[in-house]
Image (cartoon, rainbow, N blue to C red; front, side, top):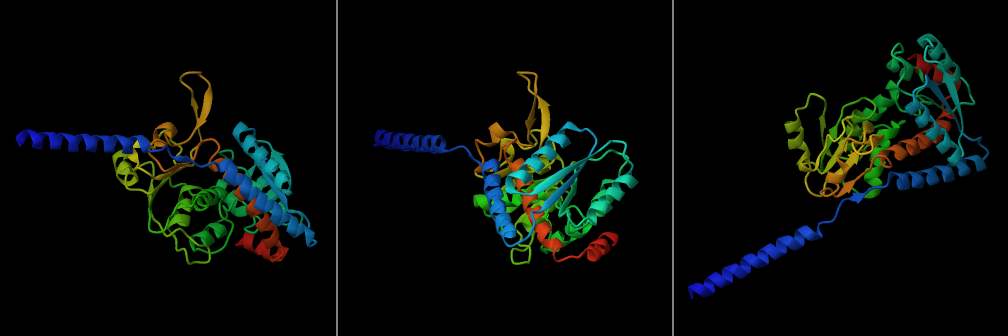
Length: 338
């Protein structure tokens, strides 16, 4: 009898081990979310919306982009934006200015474009030279033409859950989550990074009330920043259903920091040197290869959030064109002056 009991226990243990092995083997890698595919879908929607708009007698929207200095990354970003504009049927222009342009000259140019009825959307490519106050420049752009969504009026409306020009990158993250079918209601979210243009707006979109004019995600959101100890960050990320990494730190989020099946959205863009080839390459804030083995969803860098940012900028430009009809130049000037 003793021998029989021992044999029975051995069989049960073996069955348990086989079951564990099967579960481990059947664990699939994360679904890699293609930002390029989603962006193409949105650009198709914008193009269709535009064609309908033009067919009813309206002119095509026009986007003006001010590019200061010779930062290669900024030039590349602006080129992507103007190419996307042409693709969906938006006319655009890039106004190049030397690095040593004064803040007063730049503000005068913005004022001129604010009052130009041919200009529907206006953005100033960031970053700007150190001698120019970026906040002053962002607030100088008319709120109704502010396709970047950086004007204090648009930021305030976003925080109050009102319809407005949403910042393109946070809006892109929101659309990735929604269009992929990742639930947010009642979920735990960690946003790593508190920048006013990315981290903070993403947190606002995800935690606010889904019943309001500008619906939010109804999630419980934790924001971390440069002074958040790594072990404390790990405590939060290990219980997070969604992690949005937007801190600008390569490999900030690693596999040991997430729970199995979490959705990981990588907003980071970092240029690092490849240890094998010695060449520079783009990476995000997430250890992609490690995290994809454990996550449920993950976005790549490049090809994730970046294309979505450009696509949402196109949607904002069309929105700006329609807003101008509701806001005569006198009201635009009043909004800027305030």
